[in-house]
Image 1 (tube, one colour):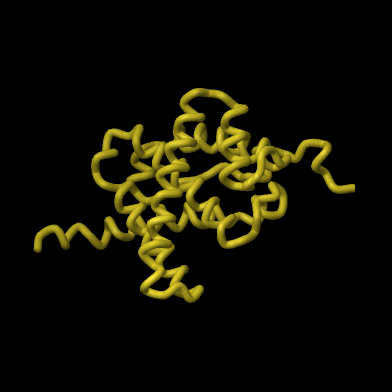
Image 2 (image 1 turned 60 degrees about the vertical axis):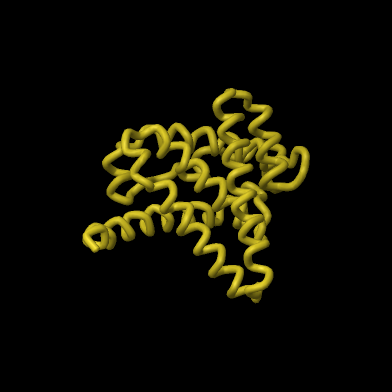
Length: 186
């Protein structure tokens, strides 16, 4: 009974953080300028990417054991469930779909962490190309890898109190990684 007294504010914080993650993942620049597939799977991949980056940041803060990451993941799963249902996925197929989403999230988060920890930019580009673009080396993968590296730095610089208050910012994707000359349209 007493746990519920602190819950509404906590729920608001988690919803605010998740809303910022989704808003950033839906930034038109990723789909227009980076060549990220503007499809349901492409949008899910971008949410997974940004959620994984926030998880990475949360692990470095002293309050990482407060359950913020788990609450964010739970909200992500609820959001995916709601969206799949809106698209017509029925009750019988939902557990399988949600299993795929959870497996994809944990696999990608682990892969992104490993390549970011290693500092191997080529490995990061390859992971982005494979996970986001579904190809070996599209031009956008290099650009998105640059954005990811900047997002990690940007999130690391944010004060823990800001995150605990349900506020975070991401770098502007248009300002971070301008398109290489070969990507510019005539």
